[in-house]
Amino acid sequence: MSWASLAGALQSLGPFGSFLILARLATADELGRYSLAVAITVPVFLVARMQLRQAAVADPHGGASFGDYRVLRLIAVTIALAATWVLALLFDPEVSAVICSFALVRWAEDVGDIHYAPLQRASRWRRITASQLLRLVGGLTLLAVGWRLVGLPTALAYVALWQGAVTLLVDSPVAHSLEPGGLAWTRVRRLWRLNWPLGGTAALISLMSYTPRYALSWAGGETLVGDYAALGQIALLGNLVVQGAGQASLARLGAGFVRDRAQFVQVVRELLPAQPVNATLDVRVRKGFASLALLNCSRLVSSPLLSSAGTRRPLRPPSLLAA
Image (tube, rainbow, N blue to C red):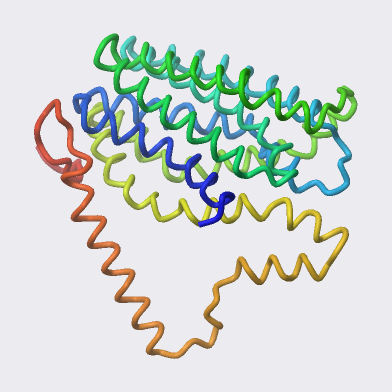
């Protein structure tokens, strides 16, 4: 695996690691509150993200500076933070505290994420990987230790402080040294007009997976939400390599499209499946059996792996038809 793919995989591994720690340590109710907080917070912040890092990396013309992207991201995620805190008032105090703390974590992560754009354009993938590893190990450690000592909401606040410290002390100096561009509010407004549909589309897509959590919370409480979320975590691991490869190819695709169409076509071919469309039946059958094997492995692994220590019972599919 290349440094680029590893960096993308580490970034995607963070949410799974956090969920796994809470599934092993926290009670079923705490796991459900965290899962509901994720479902409430993530769509709001996806709107605010507006895929600005991807836009900055894939923009071969450099029409906007890094300062423009950074300021727009900071303003947008701060508005998202305030909006999420307002939404948290609709829930009971225990759930509200987790929502507010998790929103602070997302704010710190998204502010830090935009600082990877100059490093990615410069193909500094080893530096990005080191930063992602630092965030991952420190964040998961603070979450586990903090939950033991001070509870989940305060532990999440510590994770947010850690994310902010890595951004301020590690990533921001390097990003500014690579692209010290200035700020122009006309460019910031233009970026907002161009990119807000990307954020809105990503948020709508996320609602497809989060809507069941809202319904389960209303129908049966936070415990059902935690059970439902746990069953879907193993399946998400299969997307790590795909997401890393896509993230790694953005800069090459953008530059190749403008400067060298042959390079653009070559990158597209690398991203396409190696097997031709008219594959033989034998290959298709083997792929089908492999998919079934992976599905059954994930089913066997998920139950003991994502079990709640607080209730000492394996997580099971919730049944709304039970009396």
